Structures are given as structure tokens and as C-alpha cells.
Image 1: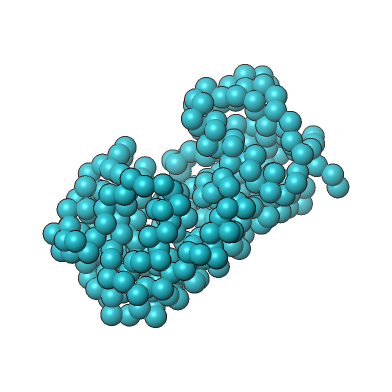
Image 2: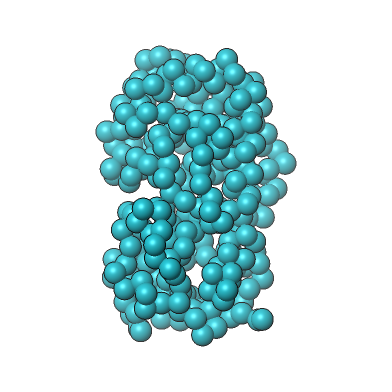
Length: 279
């Protein structure tokens, strides 16, 4: 079957539009799926004034993309052919027959990502601990506390601020022990940076992640990432374990990258959409 996709031409928040509708555009372009742009996110047949959802039409099917960080879902989900939700959580969406998990934003430039995978190689041969996250939103207190903890313990062997380009941010994978991620809106979700570091095969540490990825992609502690306590009380202990078990870290990075490729890569995402919309 040939597919033609229609996406909104604009949205109430330009930055959100560029990030979230732009993410879908790049998935379609990678898969050579034609699309057109019509109307606005918050006008026309369906209105999403909260700026965390938009309507995508695939031929005659009406599909909602819900990119909210929160775990709640739309009360009228059953009115659409399918809803693809970022940060899908089983105990909230598991019983909803046409609501499916979708991968949060990782990359917009897929060609460049696959190019960089040839030069970014996680070897776990350094003692440098990374925690390159800006404190903000719901995560201000948590991120500041974790940064202070890491700075006190590791001093010059921890990097908590990094203002260079995005590609340089990723390149630190070549020279680190691991990256500690303190989630944003919720303390149990996967953030963009965390997903990117998994995609490049780096060992990561965070509290338990309950988000589910496409293809029943569960992030399993000590397989895809290293789980620390939700209050970060055992974070230093976990880092020190990794320092003395580097083969374990390499394996975590490898399996995390495999999970990303199986559930978050652009070809897999388009196949997932078509499978769920058309059966």
C-alpha cells in the first residue's frame, strides 16, 4: 500500500512544533514517505490547545501523536484510529486498545547519527563520570543535589556542565566511565540525552525507568542501564561498582544500543506506526 501523510503546518508553540512535528518529518523523510502540511495543531477538525499533541493523517486514518511527559492520556482516545504516546506507562495505558508506545525524540538528523556511530566508541577506559544536564523544571532540586554529590566525591573527575556543540557532547562518550542521568519532568522517565547516550552504546545510570518503548521495549535494570535508588542514596556505590566492573559497563552499553536500534530507529518506528494503524 502507498501512504500519504498529512501533518500540521504550524502550532501554538513554534519551538514545540519544530521539535515534535519536526521529529516526525525526519522519520518520514528517512523512510521516503511523502507528506503534506495543512492547517495548525490547534485549529481544524481536532483542537489540541495544550501543545502536547497533534493530529497526523495517514491516508484515511486519524492518528494522534501525544508527546506529553506526563503519564495521563486523552479521555477521548477511542475516537481516533490510533494514538502514539511518548512516555507510555503500562499501568496507565496498558488497557487502552488503540494507544501505543512511541519513542521520545532522540535524533532529527538520522543520517548524521549513523555516520557518528563510526567515530563514537564507548570503551569505558576512563575514570571520568559525566552528568551533563542543566537543572530546570521539575528536575532543578534533584539535578543540583546530584551534581553536588558527584562534585564532592569526584572533584575534577566529574563533568557536570558542558556548553559545546551537540556533537561534542556526544563525543564525550569516547572518554568516560559512564553518564549519570537525572530525569526531567518525572524521576522515572527516559530523557532525550539518556536515549541518545544509549543509542551510541554508552553505559548510563538513572533511577528506575517505567516508560515503555515500541515493540514492547522495556528498559531492564542492569541490562540496558544501571538502576540507582530514586533518592540517589546509592549512586556513588553504583558508580564505584562500575569502575571495578568495566566489562559489565561495556555490556550494558551494547545492550542499550541494541534496544534503541530495535525500538527507536527511524525504519522501525515507521513500521511500528503502520503495523498498529493498519494491522
